[in-house]
Length: 337
Image (tube, rainbow, N blue to C red):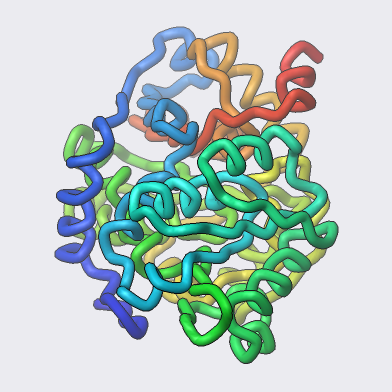
């Protein structure tokens, strides 16, 4: 099945096109076994190290592909989006590649170090509201007032406002994110199960689309914080849901399900797990001590999902994705607890 949205289909062929663009700009990231981690988990674990990319997270892949596919009108207007950090850096990176201005609206809950990282890429940062939902509303007002009335997660990109609004789930962003899973599954098509963190769900959607073509026997399991369960609720009910967001993991801090990723995940995702923030912290400690890897909360969530899955993963060949390494000072401090 091909999921259509305005500009470009979410199909395997489109993902391969994105992979050609992204591979010309970004090095392939490592897929590595860590024997100490295997011993601690009781499974053969391959870790996809996406945190080594230029912005410290897999989302830069979406920015690279977005930059290559901007319209003339988007270039003329400049870009605006909202994010707690990694999508913000991705769009700022895209704007710098394309030579266009970018304005990023971030909630006050986003770590200051992430705001600094966005400014360092040349983008303008506006701090608005306490949650990503608040920031999203403001960004939509700047980009397109009528789209803002559709609410957070509306799956479209608009160019009728002051700036060209780039939605978190713009198809170009999802296609770019999916290139990580082209690399992963071509290297390890025999995986039994892959755990993928879910914020907006773009990465998990990309993983499912690629899995269907390259490794159809592999189960894909989404993992989300129980303190921000809107995506999980949306998947469970089959309808877009909103939910309170109190998670410490900035990359998972969403308040709503997102229609386009959910339309992919609904029929393709094999399971969806909720983990606590304390479980995410424990997984981050395990990555630091058993895989020499510093992961932010979202980047440790897939391992937290594996650990919570218990006996079902025992003895299996498993993939986890460290989607980001932009750990805040608070996250780093909690590694020693």
